[in-house]
Image (tube, rainbow, N blue to C red; front, top):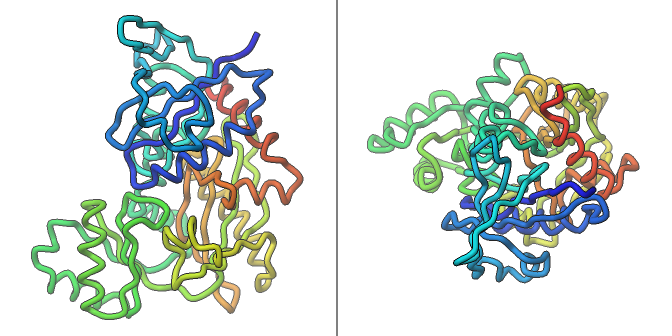
Amino acid sequence: MKQTLAVLFGGQSSEHVVSCMSAVNIIEQIDIEKYQLLLIGITKEGRWLLVPSIEEVRRGDWENGQVEAVLSPDATKKCVMVNRGNHREEIKIDVVFPVLHGLYGEDGTVQGLLELAGIPYAGCGVLASSLAMDKLSTKIMADALGIRQAAYVPVMRWELKEMALVAEKVEKKLSYPVFVKPSNAGSSVGVSKAENREGLEKALLVASEHDRRILVEEAIVGHEVECAVFGGGKEEVIASGVGEILAAADFYDFDSKYYNEESKTVVDPRLPGDAAEEIRQKAIAIFKAIDGYGLSRVDFFVTEDGKVVFNEINTMPGFTAISMYPMLWEARGITKKELVEKLIAHGSARYDR
């Protein structure tokens, strides 16, 4: 008998489009002989809709749908409530794959709803998702582990009323250029590079549009690299090899990641010394420290003298055609189809640990 697998995608975050792209690539790899698929799209406004087919996701017109499909938090039902106008039904769910990036999906909110519902799901839980999504909290955690990372200054939105004081606080600790980031955002949304005070003030205002907590970081010069992690619970945590980002822009911003064909990714790049193995071990350590489960992509810099500097961890990394996470596992002999099945099976067993 087939299991019913619900795939959640879209969402209210600035990464809505990326989520849809990732969902298409994941859905294409799901074994339909094993799973009965239920596709649920969340619009930018927050409506939950039943999507009839992957073709509508590809075309992008699914948001015009009218059939509501809302996950019930009632743990005795473990279902999705579907409203077709005059007809309502409850569809039992065995497992959920929340292919959601950014706020209101990757940050522990949907994971909390699934925990309330008692439905197994792929990927990290509430704690790991919320901790990794908030860059400032991740920084504090990395400090506790003693892992090298970029120096930083936290800024709260309300502080920007006294912009000169904020600028002085940053300049006392950091030298230009600096990177300014919303604490809660993904895919480099709202991230700017500031070369001077004028640029810093503009960047702080841009970041404040996306979050009330802002992070100002020193600029690290070196290789921008990523490592994929899988496992957790009863299963051993393993790390892939390392991939390098060759950004077409000054830094790897949203457009460079998804729309600039000049940006390249290289699997198993040549790095100084034993940096590659150090990255793998630190990726595992960080994943375990946040109580990771299922998957994550951990990002680092490697300086020219071989120092490894932690950047951030993503608990639901992109799964688009050009995304590093599946690419790194393919380089280790695990196809996308095998990887998706592993993630679903691991998610199904999350309450068995």
